[in-house]
Image (cartoon, rainbow, N blue to C red; front, side):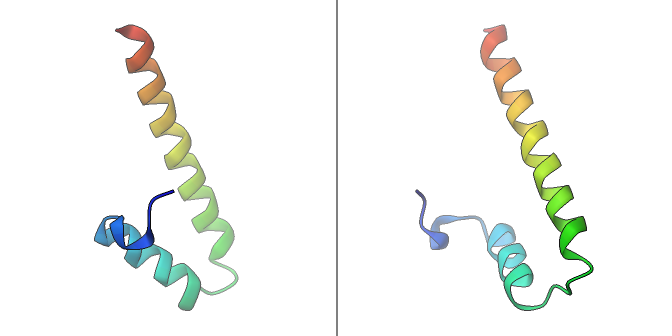
Length: 52
């Protein structure tokens, strides 16, 4: 697993925001956005890998 310090600055800022400042009502929305973004990226990578 990659160390936290090795991630891009934007990811580190997002994680710190979630850990320190995000209000409870915003967490489900953030979770949905992050999950959907990761899911779409996986699909793109898998589709490009199978197309080769």
